[in-house]
Length: 382
Image 1 (tube, rainbow, N blue to C red):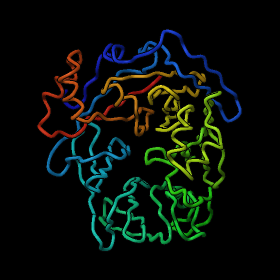
Image 2: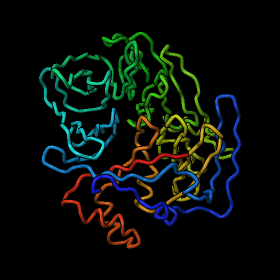
Image 3: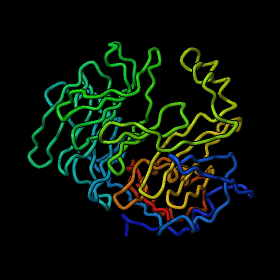
């Protein structure tokens, strides 16, 4: 079948690069501490995967052509792809067929100039967080085509999560009004602020969480902060605690080095090269946690980590192959605990030239139209 292809597991055995000596890991039961080393495990990919790897080419037409994927949401069998380049949401079904496109860029009512984030709330309500000075949250009803907008003045919110009683917003910082110099806001359904968490301190204006690292699982909002070894959670009641703590041993980034980031970036970069700066790229199913980190003094080599939450086992590995790197960098998850990633067709062309052993993937690439959309990748771990 053209749109759903299950690849042989042996393809990934040849693409994963590991060391002969396994890394030892241990865990504490309080809050779960994950101890990470800087050598990749050698493992059999068959023992990790629960089933095969599914590749879904996304239909390419004038209404569905994707510029740049910033995030992917999954709801009831459909994929909602946020295109940050064209400021729109493109919806595909489970086979990759284009269903519809949501695009309301403009300066009028229920329009936005820049699309920051998008979520699905209560089935048929698509909510978009966008800028139009001020930032606003727009609710689009897919059935009635009606829309309602909520203004969020004095904030620079760039991510949000719908909750039972309202919303949890994350903002990037850099707000001049002291009343709003916080990274996290908890609001009611009309956007009225009820609680603030994590004060920000100018001139530190960086975002604490990337668009794909602010998510909800089991009614809990999860995120990580820049230069922080912890992964945090916020309950529906607004209580914030540490969900996971990643321990790099002697390679932990010291607090005094973290402070130089606020003052002198070049000095920080020089001092921080001897340390691991914490996890990033966090993604989580009900059974596994994924994150990655950059090893100190190893030419910025990236380690990919899968943590089994049931048996507390960690697999750490590296890869230098374009395709396996795309697969091992998930953006989101499905309802049945499959990780979702994608492969850009431009990378497929590179593979076509340089990686002749990937004949199955090349055959897919050859069947795609020119300027084809990316290919979604779905996989589940045991």
